Image 1 (tube, rainbow, N blue to C red):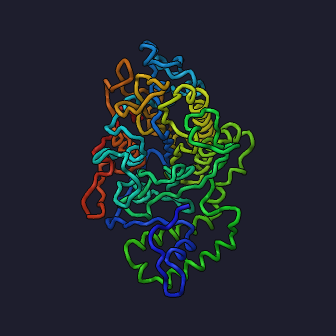
Image 2 (cartoon, one colour):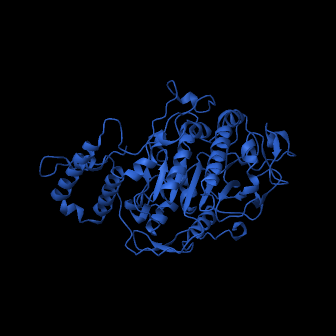
Image 3 (tube, helix red, strand yellow):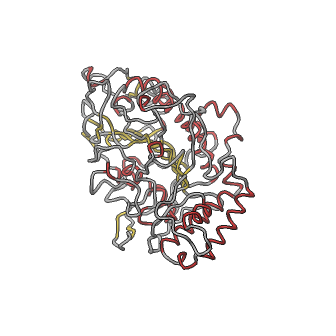
Length: 466
């Protein structure tokens, strides 16, 4: 849960400002808001997006761009297998996904300049300015795709427009990485972050960072719905919120407080809304469905994402991070991590999600997007790992609006650099906006009212559109 930072100055009735704000919402997000009126969205090809962010940098050469004819120090330990799409190979540890390749759209040439794992580029499309290893959450950041959707009015009654599962980026490290926030649009356009407290069956230490045996188990939950908080308590918090608004009306008139008040209102409305609470209740799912997705943190997140799509949420991000080995940053022990944990769980959750979307009539109206911060080095290092490599990576699309059974772009013989059709994070964002019915060349005002390109110069990837 977010903590309010700053000095605990006293309010006139004896409450500290910190205590009032915490009591009012259970969590708080600050920031100013953009003053311009958002542009209306046209009718899009899709209604919802599920972004699966493989945090840390997934090894493209060991997944969706194998090079079986490369030297051993390049191709690695895995065999490449045929897929349902003739001529296209994937890793042997993605057998179920291999059978879906004729219904997916694979980009093998995602490239950008930043050699550090940070979801900022993935979630916003921005790749300019300073090295992104220094980027943490700030009101001056560029807004995420989900925040732009919210700002542009892609909202349905009774549910939040934008949700991040199972928690905010950086939560396992005690920091807040940039990427999913409203940034200069204001905190009212931040997502709803679910909470999680994964169980491992034992204490996790730093030594487990590359341990493939750990499994983060558990479900994401709505914020502030711990077992100790009842609906009566929420009603009392609402009363206190009204007191806060009365006692601090002068503060509420400021631009910063306007954004904060919206977050308070959104939090209470959501927690009191039966539709939203029901969507988060995985107990309503049959045991067979739970098992198909898996009861680990990421299987539960994928199932919850499907339920949120059904409920009408526009943009859902699954950020694959947890303590221990819950990451794709495989500097050490790359092949064991991929073989024993990362690829099997990805193979499981993707195919369960694809099957569910198909069976429930949601495939054509939902876009699933799978990518990560960057790729990894073609050459294996001395620790049986692969290091950061932003020069070439992948993005897998599935669902509505994109060609099925299509591969866009080609890397060189070592999967090191794009040879045909390089794609930037801005291009990916522009394509998503286009499919949602938003203008991918829309300009938004930042905090100083300077116009900012919503896709940062990116263009729609016309070659992948259905």
